[in-house]
Length: 613
Ligand SMILES: Cc1cc2nc3c(=O)[nH]c(=O)nc-3n(C[C@H](O)[C@H](O)[C@H](O)COP(=O)(O)OP(=O)(O)OC[C@H]3O[C@@H](n4cnc5c(N)ncnc54)[C@H](O)[C@@H]3O)c2cc1C
Image 1 (cartoon, protein in one colour):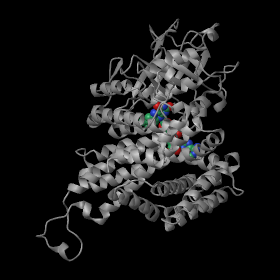
Image 2 (cartoon, protein in one colour; image 1 turned 180 degrees about the horizontal axis):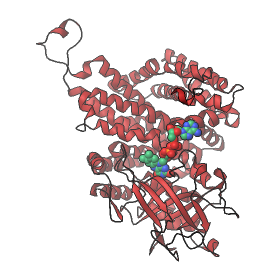
Image 3 (cartoon, helix red, strand yellow; image 1 turned 45 degrees about the vertical axis):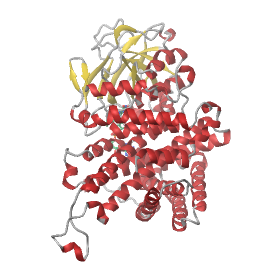
């Protein structure tokens, strides 16, 4: 079934996003306006992104002189995306936005992720600008955010450093006040930054007039020491080229230098950079260029929010960023699913099992007729459609949090706290597995660059690493999210799952029962993991816990989806029902093994001394 049908079914029949029209913020919207956005994005993705996905993989970004060169197709795609208005889709009409529900925005962006995740659709730019709209001054919004929404400027997120990835409290980029009047700069308190930022996506390119880096750095105390821990981290706007209060370029290049490009396994259409801030390569505004410490040298940056609140500002955008990563992983899974489905329908190989199968004179069958191929196709469908439904459900919670009544908004906030590690990690792991199955269906051909599936796998492999690695998501879930507010989030999620199980009891009795059992197992394992345990013991098996939790959540989502009354034609309904059954029969039983080690607080891995490896 085409992706659009699945998206429409989930949005309108299952999540009923058209009902959001009753909220004041979305009063001008209707299914027609939502459809128009989806149509536009589908068209741009089909015309400007999909045909160039392989090209941008082969023609990696390269440095020429001071510039990073990207294929012309990337420039065209960037322009078309900016012109669509999607960079500011969720923003107020007053600043040129569409006041689009986040659920529809997320669904529309999914088309780009499937067409070419590697070209990228500007999620970093809109995330950067959305953050400034939430935490910046009016001037910062006008000068930086609005120019990002129009596509004139592009944005980055500069958190990681070579020595500090998962552990951001250990960053060492320094920000010192820029002279006596530093606090009175109309663009915000002005600092000079020095340090190295690693892995910065879209850190250098010629797609836009300017690049607005959002940089985490530490302001030294009176003794010149960096404050340890996350409390010392502040957030700064560091433009590549300096601008005045009208947002016009002043002609001064800021001291942000490209130290090199990273050559990646996948996602090669997007530049990934090591950036040096304030090393003196581009001396700016009185900097002698000798890189001396103190006022007058370093990259010029403007403080966002209060000193010490940098990470909080960044994490304000975390839910949406992680839903975005989860949906990107999901769409790569879909891309492989559709490619392998098509291949399986056309590749003749082997004969049916049984009496007639030994007759070498008989024509070969297409591989889609083999049970094992059907298994691999159904697994992909179950992972990807389940993950898409979960992503859109979480997006719907974001809308509820922002526009629902106080009680619903709070419930959505809590649910999102618990579901965010899952919406990011489940697709990252299992839609990657889907890509592996897509390669398997292609046999040897899947392992070559003549077919697209190996690229999908390479592109998808990133998702378990960035935006918080798998291990970090797992510790966030078991170490924080299921415990916070006395476990209220976990309780609430459990209630929602049981309500679905009750509702499905007549038509799906086995699945309903299995879901109830799984919910109970998760509750028990959460208690067993922590029952008098030291955090190191409890968290030693955080990843198996995350995996069991994720499978339980997606089982719930599947059961909820198939319980939707909807006008479906029979083949589509049969496929959806089969994917649900597959998930309950082949996948959900795995949670027992994952939870065994959690329940027993198994320390086989944790206790092994290094020299035994
Ligand atoms: C292609 C790409 C694009 C990226 N884009 C950006 C970007 O735009 N901006 C940005 O700021 N960053 C970006 N990143 C950086 C990314 O967020 C980091 O790679 C990630 O946070 C992990 O940090 P690290 O690579 O230093 O690995 P490490 O933190 O060194 O982790 C290595 C391994 O150790 C595990 N580990 C670490 N700490 C613990 C612990 N306490 N307990 C258990 N296990 C642990 C991790 O789970 C991981 O498996 C990007 C990375 C890549 C590869």
